[in-house]
Image 1: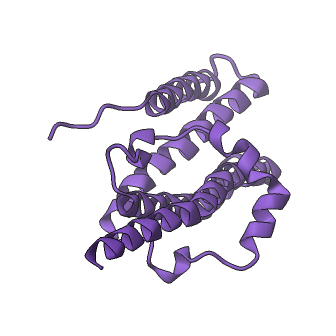
Image 2: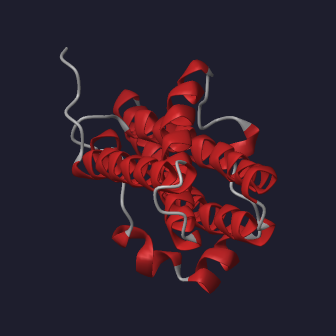
Image 3: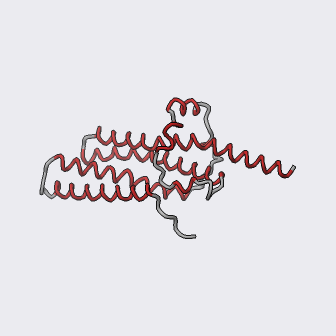
Length: 192
């Protein structure tokens, strides 16, 4: 089996990382080598660096989480009693299909069983929970550049970004589980 083709979203993410890293490098070079010492050059460099930092960490953690055995039957992934009301309040059904998916192929019922998709959803949710935690690490850059409120803001924005994907995985998983139960029920009827 060959290596999976990168999705458009994945390619876009790599391009954004490359552009942000190049922008940060140029701005930092101009500012710290005193070629052009305007404060706005430093802040453009910091913004580019933070974009690169947050996206790059997400790619790394997505690969690190592959080392752990994650499946949808684990207690953490069970639906909680308050969730349906939360999804209704946030209108998840209305916007869930409009968000980007890093690798949509992994969620295809043509290529994977509902059980495999449920496990993929659990892994994706885990990735985004890890991202929620590592988003807070951007606050540490306050020690380098000061202006803690800016780095706290980037942490909050990154957490909101990942939060939407957690909501989507948790919203969709019960539907996939119902599909699994229907398939099991059909198999049982065949044996009767």
